[in-house]
Length: 539
Image 1: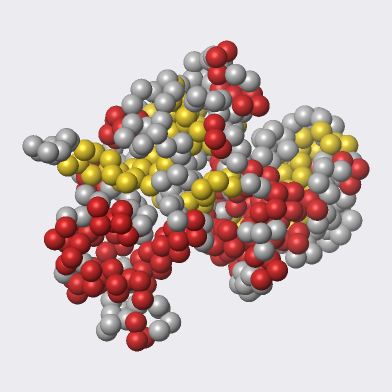
Image 2 (image 1 turned 180 degrees about the vertical axis):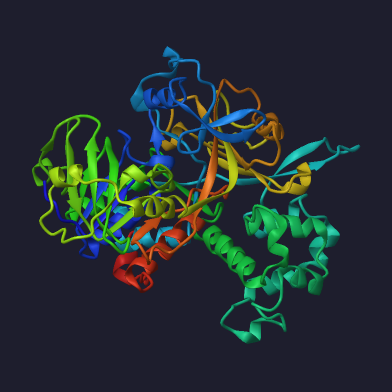
């Protein structure tokens, strides 16, 4: 195996794989490793065997408090429903299932789609439009109507006119507001109507047009897709841009702003992994980051990796001869200038995992490194690496296996349902993402509904009860409680670049923004997402 690389990427999650693909295309020599035996990391899609294995009761428990006496597993996860179960025979075979660990859809006109088109990774994948979007709003029954909880988010003007989400009087009163949205352009001052994009808050905009609380909730949570009401006191341009993105994504296909890849979200990192391999990237699963090698100033100069089991490293779309065979338990050293990793790799670093090489390291060997005594400064550098991420909040995600579509969704094969915070007296929204066999992710007749939310109490499962009631009969649940980590620095000092954990939003836009930010930090310039007509063809 080659010893010299420009970048070592640890973790094969969505963000890490996009970056390795982009870097490989840009001419960087990339080695991409993952401690797991599957691609995707936190954003993986698992077959039945891996799903039950992940949630079985064999993982060690750490002392990170999740509330209500719960403990989070090493790396920040608490996995429930661990009874050493196996999948029922009636669920079919492994090849029928690709179960996502996180509930995310793709905005049809968002930045991720632009990256997919620009890199041609879209050519490796097949997408379907999500059937519809719904929002939870309790309406009491009357003489002519029954009690209602779920309402379709309008996708056309006629649907909007007939929707019960906004009262008729408010629709007429809010006409000027919606007209303002349709013509607003952050680069055209004439469209601002005196509302400066960075000086006025979204609350100022609502007040200017006399928008009701009902419309605020609908626009802020069902259209702009904010998770809480914090946006009200922030500059209006962010929310206006989110609204414009939702509408442009909706207009692309006419009935939903979201698309979803066939066979699960795990196909996204696999697609970008394939892109990297085409340009010479080397991939190795079951591979641990054992040690990070630093120069005297604390900048990355290499890494020591170890194999969990025998494998063939791959590149060029699976050509093992590019990497060579590596045996189980074998340790090897690589030299590199930069490391990209997900938060779990930073959190696993201890002083013994950091080697500081003060002298010339050009020809240093693994044997010489193993004989080195730990440097006193290694403890400082190890702490710096661990402190590169901070826990922002905790998220609960529950995978629900259903035998029927979600009630009151007109038997949709896929949909998103938002439960706005105020409807539930919460501080943040709850999300439901449902997909089915139509998308190649489960056996015919089964449906998968993923429910997610920020944790706000000491009983996170109880917080989701309103969502579970919406789902109807549930055959099986898998619960994952995890810390959400965000990077605290830009990697400029040590050349270690850390991706953020996935947030509770219903789409990949924030994760894609994080990818673009890391690219700029690494390369010193923004990624050009300009799409020429030839790249747009057949999109």
